[in-house]
Figure 1 (cartoon, rainbow, N blue to C red):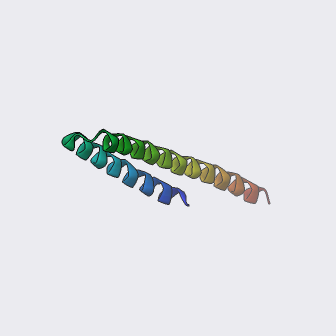
Figure 2 (figure 1 turned 45 degrees about the vertical axis):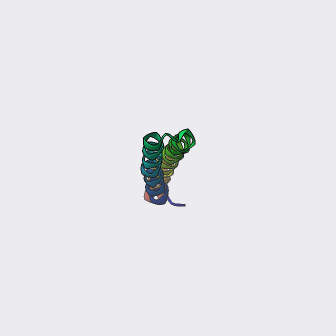
Figure 3 (figure 1 turned 135 degrees about the vertical axis):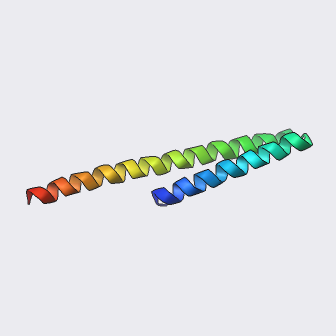
Length: 71
């Protein structure tokens, strides 16, 4: 997956998790609340992975640009 895809999927999981947690609270379903919280954590993790991929790609691009300048 690309960094943008990770970030988008992460955001979607966070939103979906918040909704699931809220519905769980509203209907008194603790398992649904916990699943919602877990989905939010998954989303945050996906976003962090996407950010890390972006950082690594940017650093690699800078290194490649410097290498091309020397030749």
